[in-house]
Structures are given as structure tokens and as C-alpha cells.
Image (tube, rainbow, N blue to C red):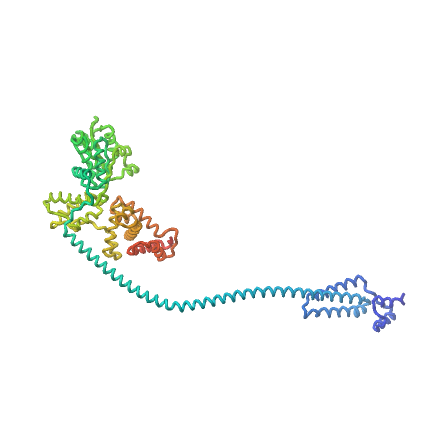
Length: 625
């Protein structure tokens, strides 16, 4: 067994017996009886696999330049360990299989690495080719853009060269137009001055020219002339078709026994119509008693209307009331809207039953009297406010006649009334030779007469008393000039022609009760032009009255009855000047927008618009709409 051990060991290690070192080592082992042992197969396999895995890992992870930095030293170390250290330790390592395994592992790793690198290079080449193609497409697009820009630049240079001559021509045209504009402005100023001079000359001449008698545009029919003459018999001086029709209705109503309610503004002639109703009625031979309810103190109403007996109150003596005094005739109750509530109930009973009680008397008094009432109030609004009995109102309004104000009657009526009052007052004051100048008559026709016929009569009476000479001039009439036009004219430097035009438009609006269509028809304008003129006057009035809509409306309306109509329009104009649908960063931006929206507004009214907007922004700096 001892003899076969060395040879078996050498054969198990796969080593040739011709290796001197091993022979020496073998001799030493024989002499010392220290035989080498073969490493167990399991350990050899495990260690060989670990070495192979390490070699494969190092071959795959390492870069090309450092791939063998650890692989070669590792193999050498492994070989030295197998040939040197293990034999010293008494072990023999089967090197043949191990070296073969490690060599195959290294070769396989290097082959796989080479194939992997080749595939990566092909993928990178494809990616670079795609990027290159994309960049080439971009380059072609940019080159085309450059060519287009070069073409545009060439065209622009050609256009600039061609436009140099056009610019010089335009500059020459501009200078020519500016010269023509200056000449035109000078001509306009000269024409305005000439018009202003002629207006003053015309006004001066009219002061000394007697007013011409009106010529009849059309021949009046015999029936119309007869009706006019019949009206004159009742002191109703008119040729107005509406008023003549109203008189026809009055004639039909007069023969009935129903109460008549006359509506209309103060001074429209309601008492004249009441007397005509009495004269045309079957009661014409009876008394006509007229009483102004507004002139009676509230505590005396009942005694004045119904009368009282002796001793009814301290110091009272028997007195016949107005109702009893009008028995068999007509009682005219002017300003019937002033009746106290307790008297209203008693008057209602008189209208229904014809009976009443005198103050201090328990016995009924029966009368047969026809009531004609008149008022300038809106009784329906008084009923809503609880100040007037609804049943009395409906009893009084059996027959309702509404008298038009003087401004709504035809202009010829103002001439007729003026001449009639002049003749009457002139006779009373011994000045029968007085007449009107043409300027005075034109002023009478143009004025809106808020006090109606009564104001006209008083104005003529005053002029007769103060006129020197035989002609009443426009100055003698002393008609009030609307303060609005004068104040705004001074504030914004309007010339006399502009002020005259604004005054004409305002008077026409008042005559038509601020109806845009009727005003436009009389002036020969379109409706939008009239609206723009009123809008301009409205902004001026709002600025003048510090944005007080009610005060501005009162100034424009000229009379209380028109204030609500004008106020509604002014509120709409003030609301639309800064519409809520738009936002403005500054007053200047709002003004610029207004100039675009109000293109038809006369330029002389824009200073008021600008001031209105500036004051709005000053009052509310954060306001943007």
C-alpha cells in the first residue's frame, strides 16, 4: 500500500512522473512518510466554479483597457496556490480540469462580451442615423425659411425704394390739405361772424317793424269758421283743431245733468270752459257760482260750501252756503283736489242725493245744482296716496275734458290771444294804438309759457304798462331766458349761434313734452339727432348741478309736469356713459370710449362729458365700470 501511494497520487493529480520537482518532493515524502492527499472532488468543483464565476464577472464588467488587470493575476495566483501552497500543505490539486474549466469560462465571457458590444454598436449606429436624418430635415426647413426671409427682405427693400416717392407725394398732399383746412376754418369763422352780425341786425330791425298779420295757409270751411266764431262768443279764442273738438264735446255734455270734470295745467282756461258749459246748458238762466277751493282755509270749508245757521258757533250769523246760492244753476269748484276728507264725503252725498246739512242745523237742505269741477292735480295718484276718496272721484268724472296747455296749441293761438289781450288791456289803460314788433311776436310764439294763458295775459299787461312808444318789443315782454343755456354757454365758450340753437331745440322739446319723434318732425331732423342734442344738454345740466339728476331735470323741463319724463332720460344717459359691461382703468380711457360711442354728439358738449367722467372717477377712484 505504501509503494502504490506515490504513483497513485501522481496519477490522481494528472502530473507526469518526469517533473523533477515532484520527484524530489516525492522522495522527501517517501523518506518522511508524508504523502500528498488529493483535494476532495466536491471542494475542487465548488472552488473551480467560484473561480470561473469570478473570472466571468471580471471579464464582463471590466472595460477594454482594464479587462485583464485582475483576470491574469487571478489565474496566476490560482495556479501558484495549486502548485505551491497546496502541496506544501499536503494536498494535491487536479489542475488539468480546473485550468480547462477556467479557460473555457474566460473564452465564453469574452465571446459574449464581443457579441454584446457589436449589437450595441449597431443600435447606436441606427440611433445616430435617425438623429442625423432628423437634423437634416430641420436644416432643410430652416434653409427654406432663410430663403423666404431673404425674398421678403428683397421685396421690402423694393417697396421702400418705391414708397419714397409716394411718401413725398403724401407729404405734399398733407401740406395742401392743411392749407385748405386753415382756409376753410377762416371761412367758417368769417361766416359765423357774418351770421352773428346779421342776427343782431335782424333782431334790431324786428324791434321796429310791426308784426304782420298772419296769412291763412288754407281757406277755412264755413263750418269751422262758424265754430271759431261760436267759441269767441264764450271768450274761447282759438283756431286749434283739438280745442275746437273739445268745445264740440263740451256742447254735447252741457245739455246733460251729469257733473263735468275739467283737467289741465294751471292757467289753461278751465273757468272759461266752465262758464261756457253753464251758458250752453238748460240752467243758463240760473246762477253760476265759482269758488276756488285752494283759497279757502281748511276750517272754513264746510261753512263756505254748506252755509251755517245763526248761533252755530260763537258770533255766527245765518249764512247761505255756495251750494244753496247755486241752486237751480251751476257750481264751479275750482281746484277740487284741495277738498278736506270730511267735506269730500258730504259733497259726495250732494252729488248723489242733492241734500246736505247746514252747519248747526239738523234739518236737511235740498238743492238742484249742477257741479262742474276742475283741478290740475292727478287725482288718481291722490287716491293711491289716500288723500282723495275714490267714490267721489268716479262720481265727479262722469264727463272728463282735458284742456291742452298753451304750448301744445297751434302757434296761431298765441298770436290771437296776444292781440286780444293787448286790445283789452290797451283799452283799459287808454293805449289803443299799441302794437307788437315782429321780434316780440316771434318771442311770444317761441316761448313755452309754463303758466299758460294766464301768464300770457299778465305778460301783455305788464308790457302795456311799461312800454315806451307804440310798439311792444321783445325786451318789453321781459320773458325769462333759460338759465341753463346761459350758464353753460359762458362756462364752455359757446358762441351766440350755438346758444341760440340749443335754446331753440330745448324750447321745441318742451313744446312737444320731450317727445323725440314730434320734435324731430318739427325741426326737420331725424330722431337720433334730437336725442344727441338732448343728451348733450343733459350732461351739461348734470355737471352744472353736481350730478343732481332731479335738479338738472327741473332745469331742463321748465315745468313740474315734465320733470319726471326728463329725469328718467337723464338717469338713463348717466347710467350709459359708464356702462357696467365695460371696465376702464382711467378717466382718459373712458373718455376715449365715449368719443367713439357718442360720435354724433356736438363737439361743444364734449367738455361737459369729460368733466362728468372725471368727477365720477374722482368721487370713486376704484370705479372701473
